[in-house]
Length: 203
View 1 (cartoon, helix red, strand yellow):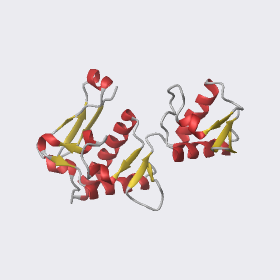
View 2: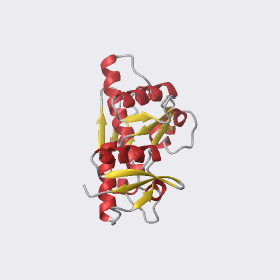
View 3: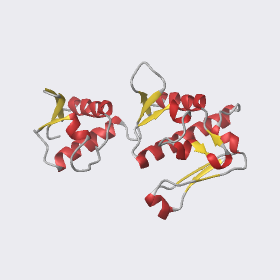
View 4: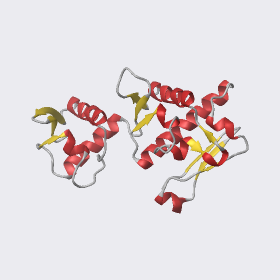
């Protein structure tokens, strides 16, 4: 169930209706001052508050939809998987690419995202779970499915035959989680014929 209420002086986002949210991510938008929600604010206090609320919304939506990547182009080209929160066609408003880029930069600074690939600023890998949290999820999954002391490829983890909490996890994020486990001797990265593999140990 997704229930999130975001309110501020000039606009609001309300995520409610639990029954509908069980099936999809839903919200209502206040249209009293619609431009403020989708544009950068000159007032420093309002801007900071709005930024925090946008970040909460982005991460909540990403977690609900299991989206791992956010790109500046998601604000440029309609019809994408982020339209539901980046665009409001009813009032003809959308978040502008420079503002989305600014939000992404703030998320990176707060360690809620990382530029991926590195050395560019138009795409981020979202941390709706931190790498440390993914490490715990990964080790718990390996333990529960009897995969300890078994060599698994990264592909077998990210695209398993049976849906798992790791399904669809990007390889860079998976690698970060495994690296964290290796520091506590709960995993070891191993070279395999078709790329990288890992062996998990009792933690």
